[in-house]
Image (cartoon, rainbow, N blue to C red; front, side, top):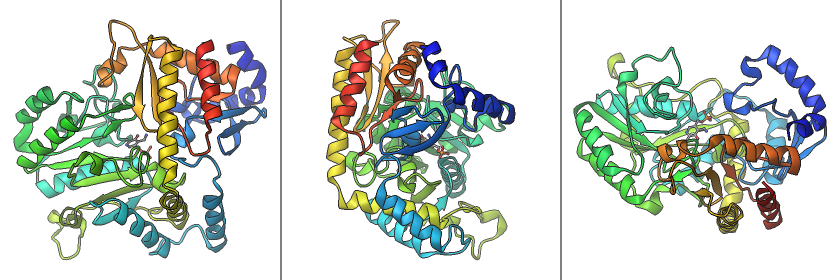
Amino acid sequence: NISEYKKKTKTSAKLFAKSARLHVNGVSHNIRFYEPYPFVVKSSKGTKLVDVDNNKYTDYWMGHWSLIFGHGQKNVKDALQKQIEKSWMYGTVNEQTIKLSELISKAVPVAEKIRYVTSGTEATMYAVRLARSVTGKNIIAKIDGGWHGYTSDLLKSVNWPFTESESSGVVNEEKIVSIPYNDLENSLKILKKYSKDLAGVIIEPVLGGGGCIPATQDYLKGIEEFVHKNNSLFILDEIVTGFRFRYGCLYPTMKLNPDIVTLGKIVGGGMAIGVMCGKKEIMEQADTRGKKKSERSYVGGGTFSANPASMTSGYATLSLLKSKKSTYSKLNSLGEFARKEIGRAFDGKVAITGKGSLFMTHFLKDGITEITNSADAAKCDSKMLAKYHFKMIAQDGIFFLPGKLGAISDAHTKEDIKKMIKASEEF
Ligand code: PMP
């Protein structure tokens, strides 16, 4: 596969050599690198990425899962072009922001107050700061394998064995505590030890980077109850799950009552965004007016926050989702089909996790038969997964970021999924 890949990506090889001289690891996000070198993209449309050698790939990475309608969707593109004609940067209050917020606040009941930033990383960083500020406590609990972006506040326990920080240079690591996903009894045991100083717990209702694993309702409910009894905050990171499975967040379907919710990806329609929203009395802690310096909490903001381009592309995307709710039944059933058929193609040697239009293949080994948390996922054969994905890139014109989960978009058809299944069978 590698020689086949090299043969068809000669221009990419040259350009990537240049990229490697200019950029750390050759990339601007570590996970974008894979061996021998990633192909270099020149354009994208619908389901397709086109590389500089004119190879076309049916994309299941979909802009870090931000493109629910696929690449270059017409309504979003038209709205952006119109906006760009007017301007792409005001640095002041603008109507586009208000329009997007009206949609979000109607669709996400807890979004009584909203703040925008330009990445999910910033949204979770601010969510954690706000929790500390509101409660006057310091410890934040996160999940073993939970990923909330590169914020120093949450960079611990991302990868197996979930004990270390992902980076040197991070201070106050002892203020981050980690709990096992979908294991209420052991999670509560840990939380009880820290309950006096527990500012909040942050959880993804479907672990994304940690293995595409849905949480059980009992688990989330149990954590929420404990957190609220201890006057701590329940923070749900719906940056991946928000507007992915339905028009709105996942939490109302699980009858949860979060204090703060973070959003990103889909709500920016493929432009840079991060959203922090939550209950009015909590979010208003960040209202600095009339407060002494020691009581202020600075949350949200930045040069590019609520820029008209991101707001416009987010608004166009949510408007289209709102008017075309059938998108979700299509996406969810394509996802179900993919999970079932990939499982069949691998004849019981894999577990397929996911929900709705998200799915991930885990090559089982070491007696693991079921994936309920990141520890199970970490014990699977990740090298085999990367090989499987690379084979599809090199031979079948199908793109997954090697080793990562896939996201189906509205641009994909059942035929696309069937091609992916056929490629899986061959592997
Ligand atoms: N939270 C979750 C659940 C994520 O999946 C991500 C990104 N993959 C982030 C936060 C960080 O978002 P961003 O990459 O926009 O900083």
